[in-house]
Image (cartoon, rainbow, N blue to C red; front, side, top):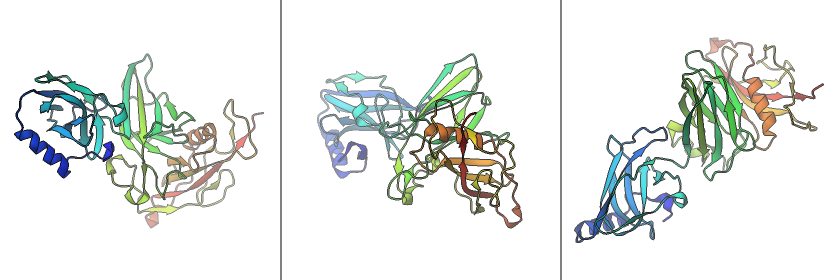
Length: 352
């Protein structure tokens, strides 16, 4: 059985555990620790196991974390073990690893009582690392987006929303999967991660992560995020991590090439039109960037995502940041349509 598929309901594991309970308890030890989330909050209800390092299908002891995140694995025979925590079918390993190959082995001798085996519950996807650093300035948020194997994902849209003012801030990841915001409001924001439309396999794509972030005064926030590939027909198996659902009141919109004035959705923003090339980008024959957009009834841009993962990420980032500030003609909501979607083609002009 692959290590990633380790569970707690297999007959073999239950039988092994039952045998351990009736074996003589001479020379056994205990393992204890605490499991917390990436931001340090205790995680309750995590199923914990001591897994034989030489045979990862064998579990020597089982436990579950309490409200304080603490666990105690008893009657562990002398040997070498991985400590596995599982929640919602997501594994995490001591000392804070998302995959078995990065886990740390704990050696147990007869009668040993090993404590302080604390670790952060790190899933194979989602927010894997969160770091707060004192800073003379506030409102800086940066990080990376990669797949579950650590490969950087470029052209991923990162969207932040302020629920109090309805303001939105958007950018895209570069070739190294990195993104950065500055001068953000110091408060709680909602974050949405949207990979390019044309990604994935078998009709699916990378999961669309949704989470909240809290920006504090005189602090810089960093997060490292991993996305996993999902099939189209199981895209909702983790509803807590998926982005805003498509509304039934959303209608199609022919947004067209910006500046052409075609279609029912017309930009009325003074900034609309061809953009200048970012510094260091060499113009090519066709550098137009196509974005998939959702426009609100008031004409504001609700979300943007790149159409292709392979186009120049510097151009995608520039297009997302510019278009996110554009305003389109407000819609007639008498028919119940509150949002419209379509594609926006953004042209770039050579700097003169």
